[in-house]
Each structure stands twice: as C-alpha cells, then as structure tokens.
Image (spheres, rainbow, N blue to C red):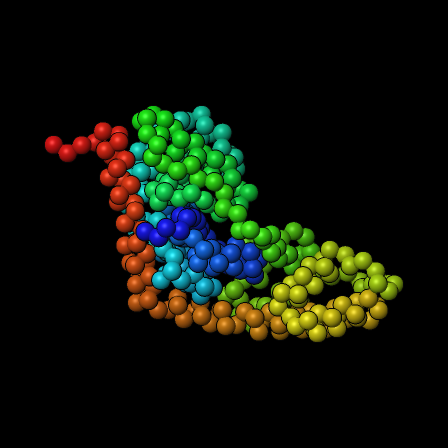
Length: 332
C-alpha cells in the first residue's frame, strides 16, 4: 500500500458524463490519482435502490467505466473497481448497520429527498445508504473523500459511524474521514438553457458521447437574447454562459472576435453558435471515439475491473479480519 494519503471516491453508474463533469470533478480526479493513493469505485450496489433492470445495470456500469477511463483515470496508477466485486464492503456494511439507528437514518436529507422522489419505492437500501457509503470509505482507511454538497451530510454520518465503532469497542481503529479539497475552485460549466450549471437531469447538457449532429442541434437551440443595443453593454446571463463555454473550447482569437462583435453591437448569434458548435465538436470527438473504443473492448474492461478488485481487496480483507476480531468473532 502506498504511503500516500488514501482518498476514496464513488462514481454513480447513472447517466453520461457531460462537459461540466469533465472540466469539474473528472479533471480533478485525474490529478488526484497522481497526488494520493486514490480509490475509485463504481457504486453499483447503491444503484439498486432504484431497481434497475439487469441489462440497464450492466450497461450503465460498463458505460461509466469506459467514460472515466477515456477521460484519463489510469488503472495502473489508481485503484478502480466495482463496488459489487468487493464482498468485504457488504460485510462491513452489515456490521455497521447493527449500530446504526432508525431515527438518525430517517433524518438524513438524502433519505427524505429520495423518499419524496420515489414514494412507491422507499426501501431499506435508501434508508441505510449512509451506512453503505461509510463502509465504502472506512474499509480502506481513507482519510479524505471528495464530496459534493448533496453528500456532505452522509460523509458526516460516516464520521459518526467510525467514531461510534471506536467508542463501542474501546479502540482507535477507524479513521474519521474528512472532505477532500482539490485546492482550487472547480470549473463550473453552465448549461445551455441560460441558467445554473450544466446538469444530467436539466436537459441543458453537452455529453461526451454526443455525436456532431446532436451537438450542433443543442448549441443552435441554446438560449440567447435579441442582441446588444448599445456598445460595451453588460452581457445577460445566457450570453455569458455561451462565452464561458467558448473560453474553454475555442481559441483566444475566436473568443476575442465574437467578444469584440458583441461590444460593438455587430454580433450575429447564429454565427457565434455555429462556430461554438464546431469548436465543441473538435474538442469532443477524440474523447467520444476513445469512449466507444474502450466500451467495445470487453477484454480490456475485464482486465481493468479484475486488477482493481485485486488491489482493493488487499486492504479490505485486512480490515474485515481485524474488525471481526475486535467485535469478538473468533475461530474455534
């Protein structure tokens, strides 16, 4: 095991990566794998809380794995594995559940939100989601976890479960994980609808697997206004959003050309969006082609997950053995 700080991050097998994901978390994950002892797992157990079909589950896992590998996660550097390939996680989840209490689980924001979203399927997996998340983290002795706002409370629960285990058994065994700080402000890529950031469910995203025709159609439909009426006027939010994307994918000369055109009131949004679409296509095509190639390479994907499981089990097996001894499970 490397002496570098252990950091664990779960990847949800839902939806496809978009430009916002790529320039935000994914770019930082790529850097993180070289700076830390990084463990990335595809959270396929977690996805069962929504009852996916077997075909959907497998294809979603395969797709998200191919996308992250295409973007730069390196199985030779980081530990990349499927959550379901680590049975030790399920055992630790079971053991932690014995000391997780109904009231505290029912009060978590993630459970209340999911229960509202899927009232016909409020299952035990939703309720104990924070316990499984805790097991994912502390089984590796992780010190830090990259989390978004929606997972901050669950990370606090993981700290609580680790601390509770230590207190109940009078040991100093589990780390109390804290949020991982990437050390810089995440790049936020806006959506094409003129408001907020790019998202999977908002219908405003440019996905890494989008083909040329889809990208052109999406960009041409992006929200704009009627155009500036006086020189050097403030850009409205929807126009700022397009320029933000242009600053990422277009040349400086291109951005300056259209920025000058906006400032002197000669900009033609149709021309701007056509150029922006082509620049996005130029950026996106190599990634899309690499995703398709990896997705189709069953031998390589099988090798990646097998290697990842073997690496992950080194520490996980040791953790379970020691936890069982601490609790009092001893061989006859």
